[in-house]
Image 1 (cartoon, rainbow, N blue to C red):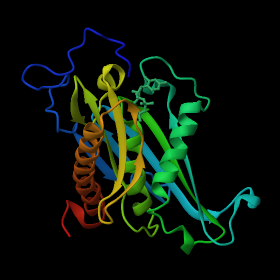
Image 2 (image 1 turned 90 degrees about the horizontal axis):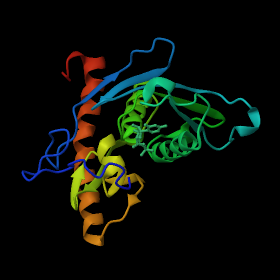
Image 3 (image 1 turned 135 degrees about the vertical axis):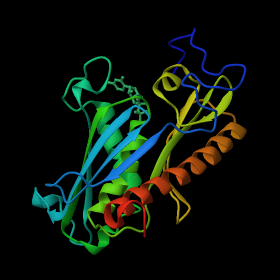
Image 4 (image 1 turned 90 degrees about the vertical axis):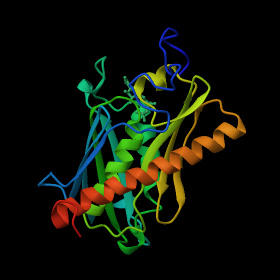
Length: 244
Ligand code: CDP
């Protein structure tokens, strides 16, 4: 954010965005459940040019033991970007940004996962960003939900996620990297569609109260669309080609 490229046209006179989308359109989304033989559950997502792989392990013993909770299971999330996932090589060591994103994804998943059924255990979620193009936390959260379901972990709901935002004084759905860099606001939203509850809401930028409300509305609608693709990915794996 912050207008790094002042010459970029983020929205043309016909209301078309820099990558050809309409204001309320998401990028192409492809989700696949499973794929990693040695994980208990896994998922792969392509969200526009984002490519992210998630592996889930558990419920399993907690090491170190003092981290375990006798009343409930615990969820641990590691979000990691490959050095080659961005234009300028990223140091493989965990950055402050990755630590923050791991925390927000964990907190966004916790309301959905029935950890109380597995006291003293841990469920570990490993997220590998292979290619990043804006909105990786939302794409990763979406894929992590599918991977948890694929692992057979009991859940109250899926968490579907997409960012809303503002470019050229206009509210848009699914902020890409250029729009994130040069736009006016970015609002990642995670949403449990069956329960109708928001589990992630962040905001980078400035919005009026009306724009804020519109971003939430547009974002939640986008999450509902993403949810359909999450269900399809699971049906494709377990029932073959989307049948039920
Ligand atoms: O990915 P997300 O939008 O959730 O998080 P962000 O911190 O707003 O990052 C936006 C985008 O910046 C990422 O998706 C990457 O495309 C890019 N980025 C980068 O090029 N180099 C980094 N070290 C970190 C992020």
